[in-house]
Length: 79
Image (cartoon, rainbow, N blue to C red; front, side, top):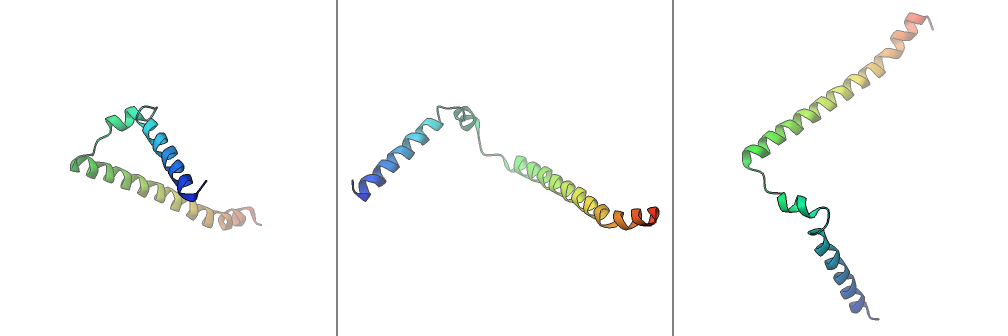
């Protein structure tokens, strides 16, 4: 079997897999999906940005406590 034949067979298998996507479990989601309006996109961007900021702030607080707590605890315990 030549290289070209193998490439064509691979291409055919990939096309068959992608044809099944529209009929499978993801088909309904893909059919209902649409492009968001400008307003929806801006609102979801704000929500995602606020979520990232909150997670970052929590991480910074944990890091700061992790950095400052051991010396304070050791001073209190006299270690």
